[in-house]
Image 1 (spheres, rainbow, N blue to C red):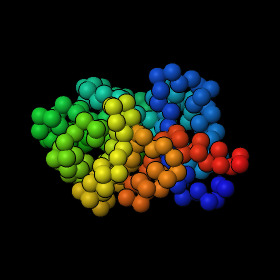
Image 2 (image 1 turned 180 degrees about the vertical axis):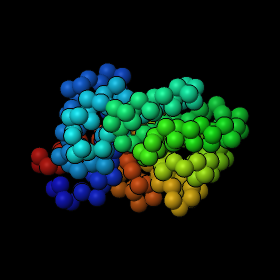
Image 3 (image 1 turned 135 degrees about the horizontal axis):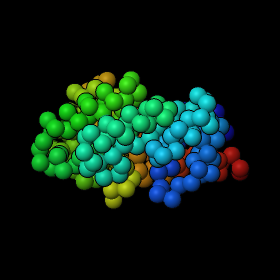
Image 4 (image 1 turned 135 degrees about the vertical axis):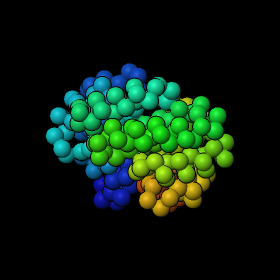
Length: 221
């Protein structure tokens, strides 16, 4: 069963970002991520050091910056990023300041992403643009910003903004980002069919907790 879904699982950032997340729950998703060969576990910053020590290099630790609203000052986001890297994070998922996109201040957005990328000190950076809050024109403009910024990924959603990834958004992002930029779909990926659909549309990573649960349920049948 594991082999059948290995390609999907290897692209999953196994995620737990709820406000009530406990260390016991974080440890469980770390165990699951290692068992099922996930791309990473995506967890709150406060658990990064503990989780990095726990997995001992067997699984990349991903965390979130400026999460979920994105409106912290750039200096604060950079400090968060530097702390996460010092604690052992290998991947950083940052939230943009959506208000700047609404104002057309794409120059400031690019400057902020570049600053956070520098604070990443070589680690992967994924830029969450919160697609559910944007017009199509704003999404396209942000694809261009991220393509210029040095970030490795553009990401659809936090999952906290009122909507998650859609097939239309993933297709649009894949069309408008530069070839070197990868796409992460997150929020609302309910099952294995959703996961495969998003991959087929051009997503390189999936942010979800449900895919591992779905494979676990199939394995028990």
